[in-house]
Length: 90
Image (cartoon, rainbow, N blue to C red; front, side, top):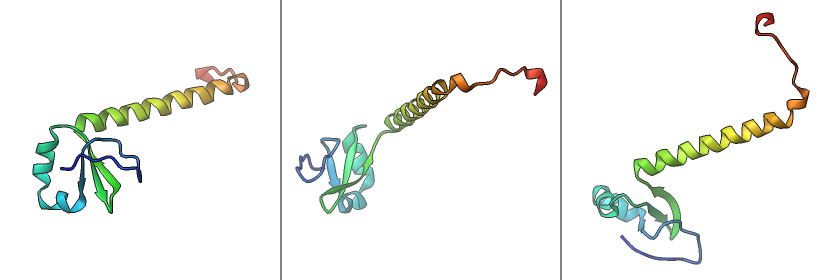
C-alpha cells in the first residue's frame, strides 16, 4: 500500500493503492489497512474508497439525518400555508 499525496486530485485518506494491487490480493489490502480508509486509484486518480463497515454506516446515517433536517426546514418554510384538519374528517 502506498502513502502518497497528489496535487492532481484531492484524496481523502493517507493510504492509496492501485486497482492492480487490489486485484492481486484484496484480503491483504484489507488486513494491512486495519480499519482505515483506502483510496483505490485508477490512472493515479481516485476511483473509489474502501471503508470499514462502521464508517459506511455512519456516513449513511449522517446523510439520512441531513436529508430529514432539510425536509423539516422545507416544511417549516411553508408552514404558513398549512390547513388545519381534524383526523376524523380524513
